[in-house]
Amino acid sequence: MRRVVFLAVLFVLALPDSAQQTSIAQGDRHVSSPASHFDGNSWWAHVKFLADDSLEGRNTGSAGLKKAEAYAVEQLQKAGLEPADVNGFYQPVRFNQFQVDELKSSLALVSKGKAEPLSFADDAFISSRSTHTTVYLEAPMVFVGYGLKIPEKNLDELAGLDLVGKVAVYLAGSPADIPSALASHYQTADERWKALHAAGAIGTITIPNPASMDIPWSRISANRDQPTMDLAGSEFNETPGLQLGATFNPASAEKLFAGSGHTFAEIAELGKERKPLPHFPLAVSLRADATIQTTPVESANIVAKLPGSDAKLKDEFVVLSAHIDHVGIGAPINGDRIYNGAMDDGSGSAAVLDVAASLKAHPEETKRSILFLLVTAEEKGLLGSKYFAAHPTVRLKSIVADINMDMFLPIVPLKILTIQGIDESDLGARAAAIAQSMGLKPIADPEPLRNRFIRSDQYSFIRKGVPSVKVDVGFELGTPEQNIFKDWLTNRYHAPSDDVNQPVDLQTAAGYEEFTRRLLLETANADARPQWNKDSFFRRYAAD
Image 1: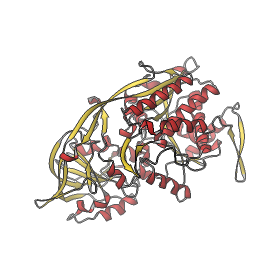
Image 2 (image 1 turned 60 degrees about the vertical axis):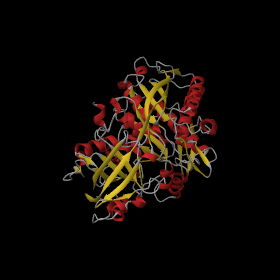
Image 3 (image 1 turned 90 degrees about the vertical axis):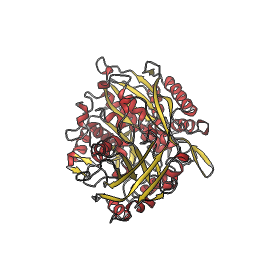
């Protein structure tokens, strides 16, 4: 953090004198901040359109999402932006959709020849996100702790275990001595599976960590039958050899550990504190019969361009991104089946449109060009951004940074910004400097167990070597604000109540947009493109 603060001071000193300044009182001190270009009202108007019931939750490939995308294109055209794809503003993306036919599927635990059926609603369910073909198997199981192999930290939880032809059972999470960004990377589905597949595993069972579950099991289970997707094309198959993936209810997990000499209560207590976990064979086997239905789906990313003014730098691009999809129609809660996604991620999509409009209303020279990117299928596993990063509409090496906005939650007064990637590149340092210049406190993720670094679209750019950040309205541990955020996640995240009837702070939204606009413009006008810090794990991708 000392390095970040030092670089932050340098960035503050380098801020342009031409920025309009206003004084903001903070306790006994005053800090300077640019006059805002936003009031929150136009942002909220966009959110209200995107989260309207008529869009039916903007599920990937749905008529509602197409309506949202048409609205976004109209707004981007009004902002004077150019299309940035050969198909105008639309970049077509093809998917395969997978759905478990539960009437023809089953799970059971087998011990001494006796099978105990598992309830899909209460115990465990087959995940179509990781089970893509119809399969029948009966296999022994091994508990592999967190299931991680991290060479950089000499961690190999699979060492000495016989996993050939077996199902690996793991608790979601990571040991506390693994830096959060590094831990997040190795918890991606493809990285974890690489190690498990190499060890001979044929399937996985994930036990959500009770200490970091954003969504209660009742809501997870109620929507378990929702279809999942993957990108069409063999180039995107990241889990070859994975026959079956299932998710187990922590409240039922003692069934897995019966006769093993261990209890799930013991495992969960260790996992809560991110302590090392034991690894051992389980006394029960898994019998699984999965019938999977597959359907092709088409959707699109939306890409618009604001050309730069510098003769050389205009061929470089800063990306401002958000995802415009949500999860669609799901299990009813209090009679409501539409999962509107007002904050997730109507908030980010609205901010992209609002920032674009502000650059027309209050033009500023940008040496580099800016791409305004609204991606599809984030809720299906960052798929739209993964496709764009693999097949960008501009040369990949010309993309210098991604600034991603996903569910930034303006639900408390704006005092703190959580910067995902604050210690990874000088883009993080620039973001911290701008926050400080606005009287805001920049912090790293205070809850690394939630694994947010890999759960949003910036990660698709990071994997291609592009320095990136995701910035959210933040809080510090042990404060009333933490409780407000926790309550929001428990009751509104991926629920119908994430709609326009929830309370939001328009002043906070406006301040967040002002911060984002400044970060976007300063990155577009800086003499040098952002660079990974020398000690960042993710620096290796820039050399690929």
